[in-house]
Image (cartoon, rainbow, N blue to C red; front, side):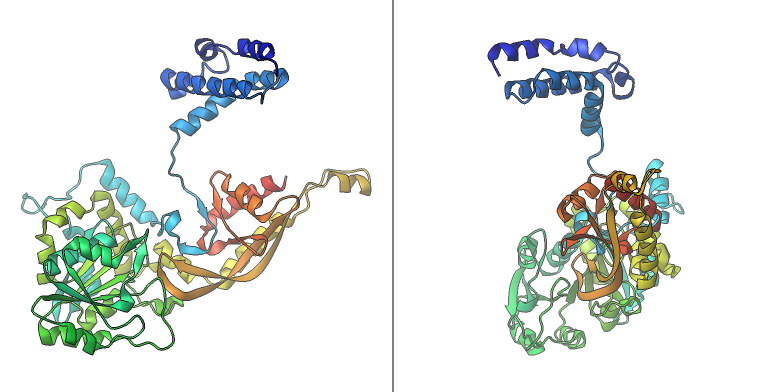
Length: 487
């Protein structure tokens, strides 16, 4: 494009002030504010200048762009002023999907958060005495009902902002300046490149490794105990398994050793189930109750994994040990706010009532293959419906048929995710999708571009939707999205 031609195109561009006063743009100020509209107009014009300079626009293309300035500026405003954090539809079949926010909260948790967040609350106020109270009492009372005793002693619970913080606080409170003994086979990476040895180093405790990667005996722990030993530590290998020639001391044996030597035993469970998951078809995941009733002194676990609540790190155990953590200045730095307490309290009340279906994570685990398959078949019928105009002839019908998405319901597997129960899978039925003219990756991209975005997985050249992790009320949204993509 000649420089004179470019100059002519540049002269076609309005000024920012002229553009903001046009009938297509001026009404946007009422919704977004004049300053924001002006900034958006400036950005859109800058892009047009750049496209002219790079010779990506000719005169007719520029005319089309100028006629659509109102829509372009509104789109710019929505991208700038809209929320970045958005709800998505999780059709991956991964129940605790870390990238998708892990455990969704219950309806009662939403309601309680709204109640507590929208007005003042008694977060740290004792309504009986009129004096200052403690924020952890709101959930500690419920944990006491659910967890009972540990080794014949009352159990207390505190909450911090995640499980890594729980491990940090517990180690710092119980083993700072001394040694914590842990098996080499339990030095796990807990996600985001954070590793147990790194957390221990930050706590001020010295890591004392015993045993080997695949075999550790209780005698290894006992041999390593010295005058600097402050803690015996067990870390549940929740995100991987070691099979074959292996050995690991039982919780009972470690509890016996801890009591014999007068040293606390701490267990980092990670996922933190509050119920026996074997009733949900999940094996290999010890519950918090199992550990505490076996006599483990301190158990740390997550609030937003198998427990099905908000992100939190929970520390349950002997009152005297938990009291040391309450008195630690780190506890204030790591504590959670009123929104987390509200969501956690609502989640725990569902456990107390044994209303497990009220907790979305547990409800998804309980769904049967047949229930999921029925929903998938309904969606498949909707997707496979042939959309044609009213043709005069058969040949006309063929020419007017829209590109369709082919849907098939097949057997598959759901997983727990979130670093929990790595060997456990749940049988499910998958909606396998393909579309003429689109690769599986392109179809998955179209689904992500939906509002709300639909997140699926790609396997064997097809897009797979697992409705186990899709709320039933979202099925019509998926059907509508697939209909649009088919068109």
